[in-house]
Length: 472
Ligand SMILES: [Zn+2]
Image (cartoon, rainbow, N blue to C red; front, side, top):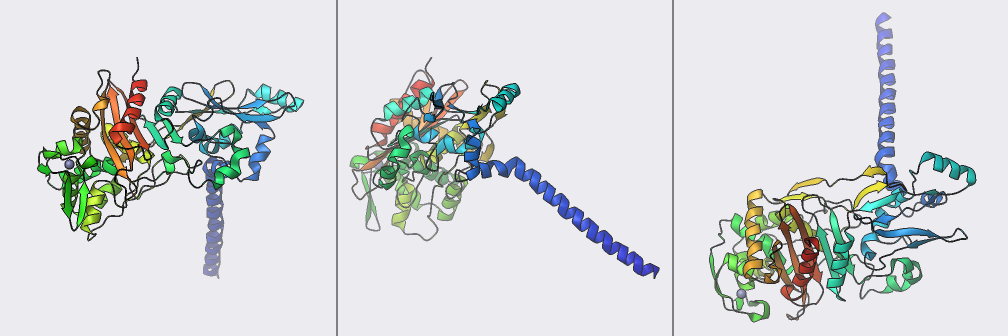
């Protein structure tokens, strides 16, 4: 009898502890939800609760790192609110818009701008007088002068520019063209949506998937070095190279003659690099590409970023191998990813996750919440970053990036002229690279659709960015 009761007690104990366990788990989840998930849930632009917030709070501002107002809410005499964008189209894709599903910082900072941390007495008085509280502002990492420099230098081409501070991951400029008037987006929505030809609403910086062209030689060169190759290995270029019935051309059919790998990299020789590609272990090549974030989610808290793709594998057609080695074939890369690769090489191989919201402040400018760049980790080793830096410097001293030679800073990079149709003369103009002076440094990626060679168009835009960044 006694024994039986103790078993029963044990059963009660098991049940009680079970309930306690469930209770603790639910409490922990609730705490977790309040801390992390609630923000995402409330931030969802389709959530009806957000409009409830905006009945009590005047949407806060979006500011640049240097304090310029990029978006603000203007209140008319009758109390009606209008969202205005003092820089107009310049920050269109980066700051985004506040209607029609939202985009950019207007989307990512939505929750923050609809909450108020004004002085509590002010809020109390607002409560009694039935006035709205002033929402908090998002201070971005964006540098207004860098963004403006990118915008002006780019002209009327389609494409994108991204500038990142390599040591922190701060996004200094994020530009995409064609652009739109963010204040008038609601009235133009239908025509913008139906415009599939120019895809105005597509943020090309984070979602534009382009053939990387010769910028991909950074990866091809590194894999070649990993497999025992040397930067002094000799090649001979006669302007074209035919293998398996397919002919690879150097840009403009230029014959580069006798050269080593370093020279072939500097002058972007397709003949040398297609041969280099044919010598590679394709599975290792693919692993290297994936280590460098191809086929992976880009590590960033910015919404709606597309992953880049690399599909080459062992046994693939040699023609596809040659094309892939020079950044053609099936490989696609976003400008943001190009800037991340350049930033990592400058930062001894370490990727700092790119971010655009730097901190939240109240209407008095007092800090409500800071954000920090998080370390993703190394995508290339420190030694490899050093080797790539040397190759990328030779592009500026002896190759297609010579327009970046400056007494004021030291520039590094790789140009690209990426074919996107069967017409070999129609190319996207690419540049990815970085520049530094003392302990100041910046990485950029530039793509200009259909503009021509990398050196003729993307390099001058990079030059304008570097000049602006390092100006005294
Ligand atoms: Zn060549």
